[in-house]
Length: 59
Image (cartoon, rainbow, N blue to C red; front, side, top):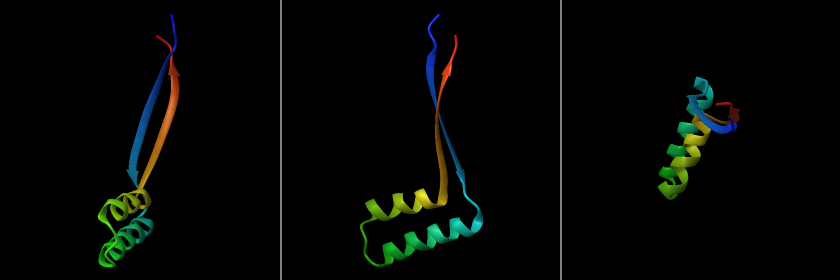
């Protein structure tokens, strides 16, 4: 048997104060005419807690 590599991606919202800061930063960037392609992903990275885990599974 060969072990298989597995990847799991966990996405959950951060605490309220950090989420508000991220949302306000994104809104401010859009208000200042920053491109939405840059402002929205950066705001999501601040608001969301994204964890990528790599593990080996035995079959």
